[in-house]
Image (cartoon, rainbow, N blue to C red; front, side, top):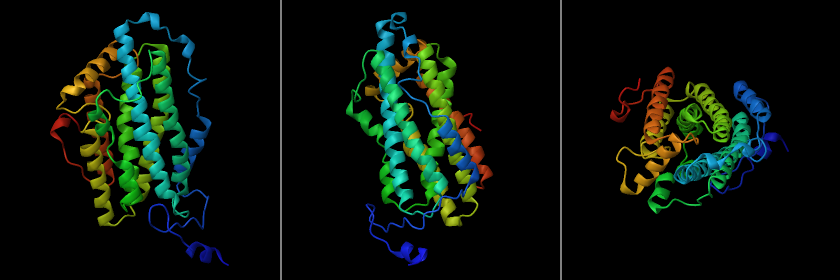
Length: 310
C-alpha cells in the first residue's frame, strides 16, 4: 500500500470530520518557526525551582497589600489557564488532525501548552505565598468575562488556521505589553523574576504568530484574507475590549473591588498592573497590530477607545 493510499483512509475525528494523520512530515516548512521552537526548548524553566521563592519576604508588606496581590495573582492563574492552556490545547487538536499541515506550528504549540501551564503554576504558587490562592472569582459574572468561547470557535468553526493563530499573535501581544509594564514597575524580587520569565515566553509566542501569518497571508484568496481580518476584529472587539486582559471601559460594580486591588498591588511593587496601565498597554498593542496588519495588505478600523493609537 502506498503512502497516498494510507493517507486516503480516513475516519471521523472528535470534531466530526476526517482525520488525516498520514503522511506525517517533519521536515521544516517555516524555518524561522522551527528555529524558535528550538530556542523554546533551550529556554524552558521550572516554576518550582527556577524562581527564587526564598527571597519573598511578606513582612515587608501590609495585610491589605498582600491581599490585593493575592487577588491579582489568582486572577493571573485563571487567565493563563483559560486563555492559554485550554485554548492552545484546542488549537493543537484542530491542527493535529491533518498530519501534512504546518508541522512547525504544531511542534511549537505543543511546547506553548507547557509554557502556559507553567505561567499558571507560577501565578498560583505566588498567590499561595501571598496568603492563599483563590480558586474562583468572587462574582460569577467575572467567569463569563473570561470565557470568550475561543476553544469552541477553534474546534467547531471551519476557519483557516491563520484565523486561530490570530489569537496567539494578538492576544499574546497584549500580554507581552502588560508583562513589560509589570516588569518595569515591580520592585519585589520574586514578582519581578516571575514577570521576566513569563515575558520571555510571551514575546516568543508573539513572534511565532507573526511569522506564521506573514508567511501564509500572502498565499490566501481574497475571501480567506477577509476572514483573517474579521478574526483580528473579533479578537479586539469580543475579547480584549470586553475585558479579558483588563477591565472594560464601562466598569461594572462587581469589578470595582478587583480594580482597587490591582492598583494597590501595583503600588506595592508586587507584580501587578493597574487598570490605567492595562488600558494603555492595550492601546499600545493595538497600534502595533494595526501597523503590522497594514504591512500584510489588510486594514483594521480605528476605535474611539484607542485614541492616540497609531
